[in-house]
Amino acid sequence: MPLGTQCARAYREAVSSVILTRGLTKRFGASVALDGLDLDVHEGEVFGFVGPNGAGKTTTIRLLLDLLRPTAGSVAVLGGDPRRDGVALRARIGYLPGDLNLPPKVTGRAFLADQAALRRLDLSPVIDELADRLTADLDRPMGELSLGNRRKIGVVAAFAHRPDLLVLDEPTGGLDPLVQQTFRAMVREAAAAGATVFLSSHVLDEVQHTADRVAVLRKGRLVAEDRVDALIARLVRTVRVRFTVAPPGDSFHGVPGVAGVASPQPDTLEFTLAGAAGPLLAALAPHAPLDLHAPEPDLEDVFLHLYGEEAQ
Amino acid sequence: MTSSLVLFRRALADRRRWLLGWSVGIVLLVVLTLAFWPSFRDKADDMNEMVANLPDSVKSLFGMGGGVDPFSPVGYLSSQVYAFMLPLLLAIAGIGIGGSLAGDEEHGVAESVYVLPVPRRRIVFERWLTMVALTSLLAVVTFVAVLVTVRLVDMPVGTMALWWASVTSALLTWSIAGLAVLVGAWTGRRGVAITVATVIAVAGYVITGLADAGIGFFETLEPVSLFTHYDVLHSLAQGRPPWSALVLVAVTLVSLGLALWAIDRRDLRAG
Image 1 (cartoon, rainbow over the protein chains, first blue to last red):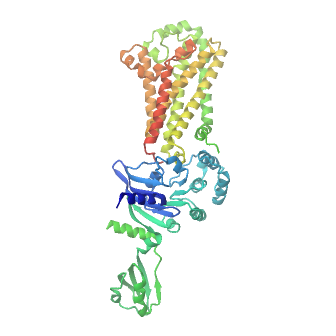
Image 2 (tube, rainbow over the protein chains, first blue to last red; image 1 turned 45 degrees about the horizontal axis):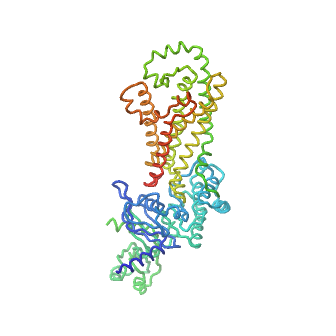
């Protein structure tokens, strides 16, 4: 490919990508926390970043924020270099850490006022509005608050300046279900207003219902990256069909997508389906099925499936 | 909405009780120590005879060297307040604040500031400034406490001599506590920052004390000791600081510069 075309492509990637990493690697001594990560998060999308504890999610986030420096590879955030352009970039980023440590003797109000002052912004009306919405207590020293109430203050700090990029690490941990709902609404509103959301979580349900695309990380490496629905479509699912009289399981061998057939009860067949369901449905039709049950696969299954593949 | 010195002002506000506690402690120590001066003055001959029998190294280590009568006003102030007790207290206070830069990082509290649109250097500078401001306030408290008490016990020492003695103490404290800021910025470890600054201070005190007593090995090390440049006896006796105090200023500024450089060159620690 001619050099000019390569440059043009790199430029297009850089301008449309809010987060762009290539071969991003971070080692701590002998241990590899992140191993050649390629990520591309587009403007305005909610991007789920999923993986078990220790997979490298927080390390990635700390690299995006210039709290850590890469061992190898490159990282660009909002088109800039987190180290060189750090101050300007961080003005456009809202961050909620997974392990939120707030000064214990300071009230939430004073803490948020300091944060706003350091951003050179007058945010007191927004802070009050967000605190009301999340029912956050801003007038007690933060060391006296429960984990959930401290996290509410963290959420206010991340959202108050209406950032272009929200980086949220395990955001709903410790929040009660009602506040979690409010939080998800806030994420959707921010995305609707044009913000990009980078949502890291090991709570898959959280990502599944909020994110447009998901990357799955394991042991510092990207295992999968796709749209949530596409990732689910890749899943091997179970379809359970009940008949008046079950046909022999052998008659479904060779149907595209059917990876296996079992007969748990005399009137029931259980199909292992990999891929589209159409051919199986067509093959079932002549046997007049009474009932068909195909539980919607969730990301947990995708997760285990992908990890299973990797383990094999 | 102003962002000027927000971190400095917050750090000061968080230490209001700290400042009150240290001020009360220093005032009590100064008053109690100087209250005994009239009794020592009246028995100066006996006391001098007793001190004369002590080894030179012991006299030096307790601030009674330098050929000055330890029970004269200047000698008593130097040996009982400025040579040992005050530097010790100010160094503990200053190293504590200097070490808190790394302490906040270790506890994860600093992360909420490092992710803001604020250069890392500014965070270090404002904590350094907190250390300078608070130890300076303690030095001023010392000055006022000593000034009032010497007048009460009828001790003939000039106001400017006391002022410069307190200023020299503050300069020594900045140079020691500045090392805690530097090591904290370099390593992100509070324990290492406090240990290094403490060891350098204690080693300096011993080196200068034993060098003053004429012990050869320590005389060769004398120039590298911060206490060598803390000639408080000069400030008290001459009513102006010694030129060597500029070395303390230089050490303070160089360590600040290195701290600002070091913080930008490493990974920050997770809480």
